Length: 257
Ligand code: MF3
Ligand code: CO
Image (tube, rainbow, N blue to C red; front, side):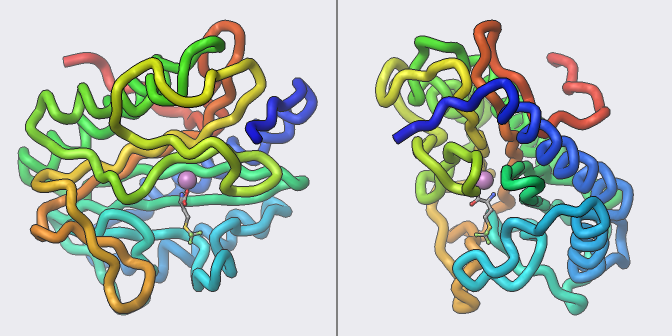
């Protein structure tokens, strides 16, 4: 069942989303060569708790941390550690979720660590663009698969591949609600979108093949071919005019190139 949220509920979700966006802004200021993913996790947890909110991931099916920090060939669900120190040229996907006053926000970005290769920079740019193309495909009366179609079309035009094993999701009073939102497919399929639905749209894109595997820690998903991977996510509400980005940050949407 897909829940449609009232205006009052959307205001609460906006507060949760704003906090998640602020944490990601702090993460982008903190990422640098020599910083560990464990330090990033501690900072994120402090910001969330100080805001009177709760980390959404910690304890979720036993997940041990506040953020997911996935470096280079790690796709998602990398577990932060003081031993994992970032180096110049790495890319790091940081996923943050929080609940505030009973409602969840969920958002992710992939950041360059210092100067990265042109190939890595292109992967990040195209993956972020695919998220905005997907968001632009959201409208009442549209279909869930319009979202994934927009992602796939953009990503594959650059020779990158869409991860199939993980999907976006509805979000609200729980982190994961219906519907599931694949990042690929034909348009015009699946549930119809309606005003008040709230969706976490999260393309995961590999530079090489789409195949992933989960490491023996039970969480970290990596590319099978060890190619780089990127992940961008926003929580958005379906409105009459289109999508409203609840996890929006005070940064520019990348200009078309
Ligand atoms: N954004 C991810 C998701 O939608 C984060 C979940 S991490 C977990 O599934 F540890 F909480 F599972
Ligand atoms: Co999510």
